[in-house]
Image (tube, rainbow, N blue to C red):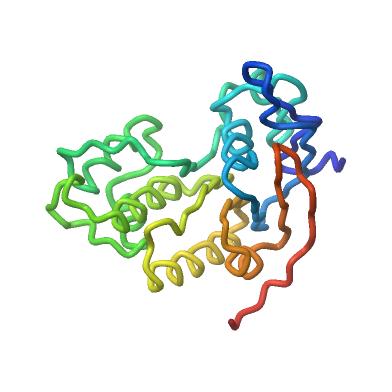
Length: 223
């Protein structure tokens, strides 16, 4: 496994209540690439993403990010944006208000950057509607904005096209390719093979907590 890889999983396994959730996962991922993960529900994609960003600890093996071991030398990756399942936004706040609250945790971006991230996902940063009034598609877009707003080195998106219409899917594709060009390491899980083949530089197929296939994809500018 290349020592220079930005993100590495080394013999990563997770067992919960005697059930094998992840089994001997090995990855070597770099910045400037999009990595796709495909598999049925329960195949282990979401649990792998949780392990890679420090939300769960492996039973065996380790995750190394930029040379430092997750869980030992750091609790969480120092620069990560994550969309896994449903973000915990507050119903009584606007989209901008929710992101501003989250931005205060790290305090590394200003209001202009928050507004820019909201625009990048096709929402209006000046929309006065509270989050409870958002459609499912709008909620998904705001979740993506939350993941990218601090311009993290590592971006992990679990089923990011859920609830998006065709325009939203196209906007997301363009956004991810732009982020890739900015030297981000991007991981996407999806059921959609065509979508993943289009976006991914490499694609991993998961089943029963294992990677059962891995191949390179040719990214094209037309579809």
